[in-house]
Image (tube, rainbow, N blue to C red; front, side, top):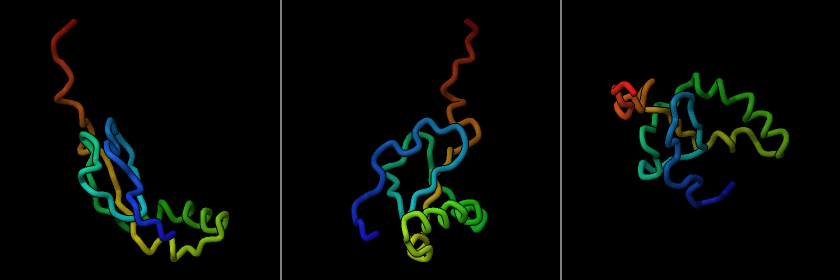
Length: 92
């Protein structure tokens, strides 16, 4: 649990059209893919992750508090149609 390196690398979330990626700890903006952005991590997000964190805690004998201590970063698409400007309107 004391890993100090970056857990993600470049292009995280590139091509996302929906959903969210949750990363334990902080994510540098330089690692975000095209049309992916950091969003506010809310209590609702924590409620969503809670069952998975509890299961992980049991399976890997890791205190739940330790898993939550670093906080989380939420990555999501910039909009509901992140690639809308890329599509051509020209009929084929």
